[in-house]
Amino acid sequence: MEELLKSIILGIVQGLTEFLPISSTGHLLVFRKLFGLSEAGLFLDTMMHLGTLVSVVIVFWKEIIYLIRNPFSKLSLLIIAGTIPTAFIGLAFEDFFEEISRTGITVGWEFLVTGFILWFADRAKERGHKNIDQIRYRDAILVGTLQGAAILPAISRSGLTISGALFAGVQKGDAAKFSFLISLPAILGAVVLQGAKLTNGEEIAALNSIGIIPMIVGTLAAAISGYIAVKWMLNILQKGSLKVFSYYVWTLGTIIIITQFLGMW
Image 1 (tube, rainbow, N blue to C red):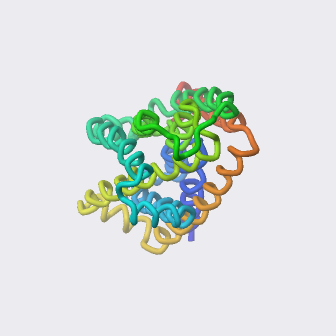
Image 2 (image 1 turned 60 degrees about the horizontal axis):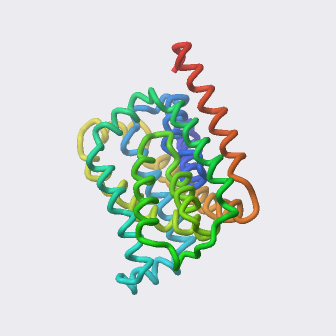
């Protein structure tokens, strides 16, 4: 029962923080440390990412069908253009990012950086004038590059991609929509790459330590909370402010830095 509860909590955390601009990887790192689940590692991350992938597909199923039926449409090509720098950064610096994520030594500072980016993006969101059909390829490449940089554990992927689109002059609603659509190949790629590594004995032992049922329930929790987060984020960008997320990640980052300084991390 304890492992089931932990998996549900982690699934909810993953789903909410994947699409709210506060970093899912950073939060999973914090909660795994709190729960003593660092050994769950790759299996846990893969299943949680699978859950969030499902939530995006559910929200944007019409757009996804359009992309499948029109693989050479401008939107499809924009997503491909944005995915290229993301993939390059992720593959070129995979070992470096994995080491950073494993130690979590920079996670507090990364939360602070995320907060500053969101703060400035909030000031830019009222100046957006481009709809999703007016996004340029260089805008997509900028967003994709920022998505690649967000592989760092506490740099928010959704925060950076939404901010990049806002800085490029995209309307706030379309900035969020493009951010979530461009996340599809990134999340799918992460699931595939992580899944390919799930054959060694350590990962099988990690699965056994958690249990199949808690893992499945945690994945469902990630899908449900991810769906809620996507809907919530679309509404926040239309009517609310990103600054509240800045305050949150600044507070969390400061607490982590202090605990690291005191040797409690």
